[in-house]
Amino acid sequence: MARSRLTAERESELYEAVIDLLGEVGYDGLTMDAIAARTHSSKATLYRQWGSKPELVAQALRHHKPVRLDEIDTGTLRGDFLEMVRRSDDCRMEKDSAMMRGLAHAIHSHPELLQALRELLIAPEMTGLDALLRRAVERGEVAADNPALRLVPHMMIGSFIARPLIEDRPVDQAFLAQYLDAVVFPALGV
Amino acid sequence: MARSRLTAERESELYEAVIDLLGEVGYDGLTMDAIAARTHSSKATLYRQWGSKPELVAQALRHHKPVRLDEIDTGTLRGDFLEMVRRSDDCRMEKDSAMMRGLAHAIHSHPELLQALRELLIAPEMTGLDALLRRAVERGEVAADNPALRLVPHMMIGSFIARPLIEDRPVDQAFLAQYLDAVVFPALGV
Image (tube, rainbow over all chains, first blue to last red; front, side, top):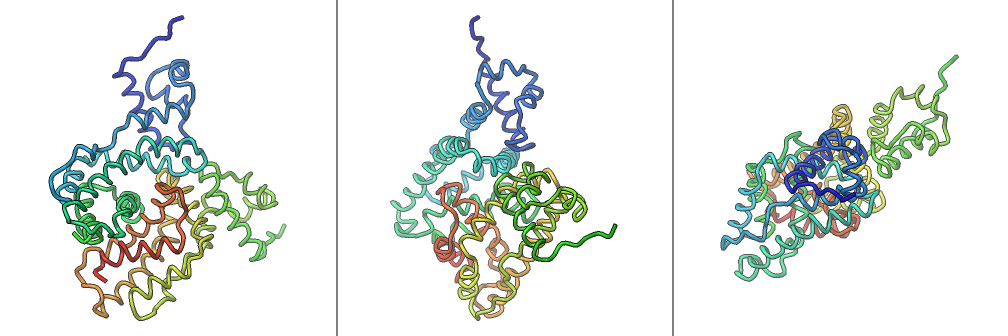
């Protein structure tokens, strides 16, 4: 029997459903049954196409594109960061932050998942952020030996995780802009 | 039959085991069976003493004291923060960070757990941190209207969550000291 391919659109729907479910029930609660039910597909299709849950989740992460930092180049560090905020819509940020919570424990008990997350989401973001910060150093906006340069991802991740935890509110564009002004720019001496 | 009480020491052991297991298997994977096996106690004892898993976890959190910020008062903001780092031993920080990851998803699907975490761990930390920052403002070390004042918890949580995620290394005292110097103090203008 010829292996029937899903359409690209159908595949996108499936991946989005996996990301949503991750945020709702976490990695351990995410079953092939739940994915099949949510997407109105058969488990047979899921297994034929992806083989296993870790593979399906890794593919869903690969498909789930973060804001493309490498497309941003406004000419100033402040401008680049504010453009990054402008491109992050509130609904998407809430979904991403739920997904990260859903993965938080799983990535430490499933090393292959942490590996996938690093390669597919964290590494591209870090590369984009590095490029953006390197340009700021070259323009003389930030001192090359500023120790906060390598801590920008830590500051940003903090804003995403801490707000729901402490304030019981999701991260939104207004909060991110305040956080940049109060924390990130002063640490970078901008 | 008279309800037999556990000794305080035995209770402490049980709570520590619950915290360890939370870090290892996450809240959803934490079963009364696993707790009974790890602590060599009977499930009957656990249910008699705590009634249910959420109650047992809430009590374990209550028992798991964070660094007591309200005992710290060195006379300068820098001194207070460095004393906080000095009192946080590396092994304890690694355990706490595993526990937080284990709880990350669960607290969003179990509101009573988030409530317990807020009341028992977050609120006392926030109160301690507030007092420490208020003194710095009174001494004139930090401007009263510095917008980073209310974002210190976000910055600190970022350092804890992001390092294992990005660098695959646990938070330790040396890293925390660097983070304070590079991020927290500049944001506060100290």
